[in-house]
Length: 306
Image (tube, rainbow, N blue to C red; front, side):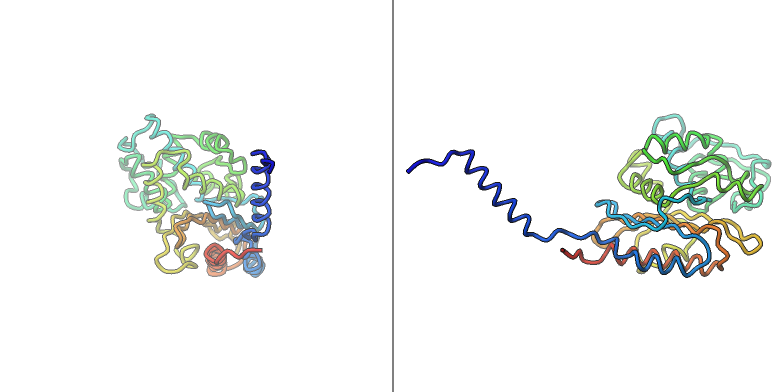
């Protein structure tokens, strides 16, 4: 009997394996299941709603107006914190470095627990300024940190990370002085989840810096009726909100972005921006909560196969 050449045997085995694989049902992306609910929730409130939600480990993504620009308001404190911590990692700044905050540095007409506690000025470490900016969304702390790492440097960091649809341009003081200035600090929902994904994956800051920032985002005291309130009790969430004041019944920004830890150990990055809304605070925050729940339900649903 003639021997079958080894190459032919290998090719026959490979073809059988390919045939078996072709008969297996392919996994279906789960995040698309949230689309109908997201569309319905967004359509029920006045204003423009932008959403992006992604399972970080797989890249599975759902969006609504995900490539449109939305004013970030205090959401921009996440890239600011990352840029400052990058300088700390490089040895150009120290967390223990003391910064003198003068009375005239206190930013008026923005949320600033620092200003309320010490209106005549104080000394604060870089670490204290970072924590105040993230946990309490302190506008004075944010502007002091932008004095150390200018807004242009923050945007440069973003571009180096491949995030081209997020801009950090100006300060809390400037936004408070003129309402329309807030549109200069903008992001698309997609860019926001891209940034969160990089943060979760350890870019562009060291593991200790990343752990510090995520711990502060977990401790945050703002926007508790947004992403967090839509999820099961006890769900780990590291988020950062952004909120404009309401003027003549119009609120230009009600936002929340965050990293949610799923029961299976994976992570959901979610960004919800509500722009130019005449809805009530309850409507705007309730929409963010419902959208977060829809994304959660999709991310935790068993993956069907087609």
